[in-house]
Length: 371
Ligand SMILES: *Cc1c(COP(=O)(O)O)cnc(C)c1O
Image (cartoon, rainbow, N blue to C red; front, side, top):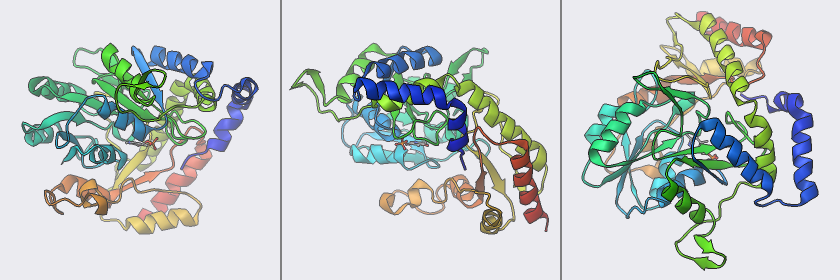
């Protein structure tokens, strides 16, 4: 699905030098490169504070810890997402409230958010799924009306822009009170291990987040609040500092691959190409098709037989996951999500796809669906 080998070969001298510098300095934890990357990312995103942490799941967790929510408080999120989004809500003894997504963009449906609000609702966690933004203006409007926090799960859309009604733009993850990202190797800005970060423009939240990720410690060995140990290590920061410079070029390459797929597959009665949401640029974390009257498993197996990987993101909606079985929900409650789980298939998507590979992938897809 991704080709990190070839991507590395293009930037090898810079990456190797950055890693070597960390090893030479032996400043493995909180070395100067962590701060340098933080500053670069703040400038790139146009956000006041980036708080690096150990992974995207931690980013979501610490951002919710920073809000001082009480057990039983409700947090609304999408029913169609990676499990981490709901996991941290449950882990903190908050109540995840799942809502339906839009069948075109796969992103959280604002009308469904409205219907899910109760006096216990404290926060909304929209996920910018597959690389394009959720409908943030409507979400912000609901949040303002009901005095709710908005935490963007931006693990899949770093670098994409939300386009407001007035034409102004903001980077995904910098629109709500906090935004969370993951630097897992296969993400759009990936390191060579685990990493993550929280973004915010709020000075108080930023200060609190920096204390939480460091054992709740303000003065060394004085712990004012309960925290966690969640750091981005220096070697990962060195890798990210190099790769951040390439992020926009990487997004352009992903878009070019998506354009190729679109041209080859558009209009086929058995497939629907991804719908591009006009209020967001798309950084194509995934290129996800919807199959219609098609043996999806057969297509996946056929592609695999030609050494073309294809993945199902996500085969089981959150409310049907064993660990999250909840009397509030049953099969049939989220027809859009449940339909998507049965119909989606994602094609290889990364920065190193060339025309020959793309042609081979699309002709194989067409060969299977036309036979
Ligand atoms: C990857 C991902 C996460 C978790 O990130 P990790 O760094 O793997 O912990 C959370 N939410 C979404 C939507 C993701 O894609």
